Image 1 (cartoon, rainbow, N blue to C red):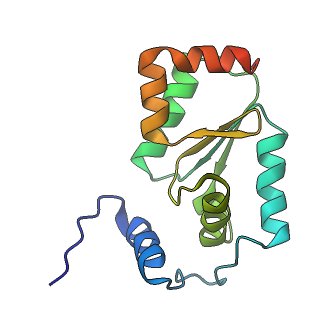
Image 2 (cartoon, rainbow, N blue to C red):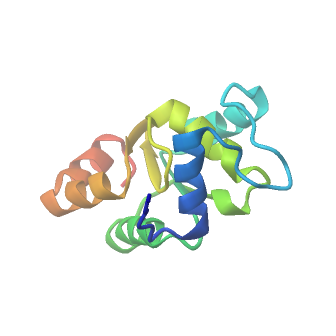
Length: 141
C-alpha cells in the first residue's frame, strides 16, 4: 500500500500527483504546457519589471512566512506579489515556474529577474544575513 503525508492541502497533493503520474490538475480551464507563450510572457513581465517578485498562494503557510520575512524586515521599494491561486490557470502557472526554477511549489522568489529561492532558501538567507546583502546589491532596499 502507498501512503503520502501531505500538509500542503489538496493543491499540494494534486501537484505531487501531477508530477508523479503526469496527470492533469483538475481545473475548469485545463493545464497548459510551459511553452504557452502568453502565460510565460505574463511571468516574465512580473519577474523583469519588478526588483523583487514573489509567486505565492494565499493559503500557503510557507508563502505567508516568506512574505512576512520580506515585508516585516525590509522596506523593499519594488515588491510584487503574484497570488497564483487567484490566477485563472494556477496549474499552468506552476508548470511555467517549474520550467524556470526547477521547483513546482510556491513560494518562489525572484530578485533582479533571477530565481533566488523557495521558502527554505529564503529563510536560510535571512537567518544568515545574506538576504540583506542580496537585496542591497539588487538595489531593492
